[in-house]
Length: 238
Figure 1 (spheres, rainbow, N blue to C red):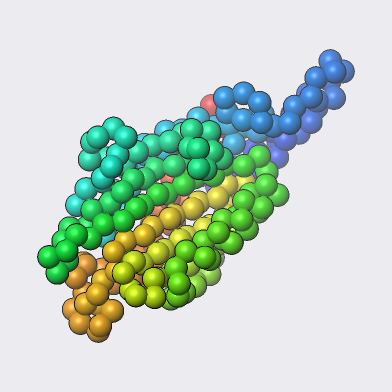
Figure 2: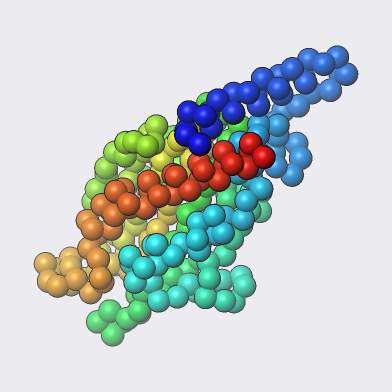
């Protein structure tokens, strides 16, 4: 289904919720009760997901970055951890897939970091806009030096990629926050800085920062957008 149909379904769900609140039984709903967090069909469907299943265990990012393994996982396996809606103590409104990452040694030193991809379903666009703004603000203070800020357009209503680094170059940070209607995608990544690339030499990684940024915007983000919207529309319609 198209994004327009998905938004129409969300509006219809809000109308049903409004009518039920005025049914005369004296009950009220604040949209946060129950396992899936309320009556909106799109939000309820998305909140029922197992995030790493929807996101393919982050395999596209693994392949592009050359991630050797996920580390310090709860399961103890070489797969990212999945936290469903309400299960993450740090970000309960998000469905989270991620873990520590091992990028292999560079210059005989360990290269590692953390990666999380979050799907954040909200009850309506106003809540999503608020969540988007808060996440962008939180992303702005991670590194000492901002190295890139790129606005993200279609198929997103709004979005930004923020790249920063420690002043020493020891760590690179990358955040992507993008909103489509009533849901937000948030990618939070940090990893050991590429010292050779920083000095203008051949990169140690199989990618440069600029290549990673462009791949996320041109390839990964549109694919995730389509996957999330297709699954949400199919689930809410069933």
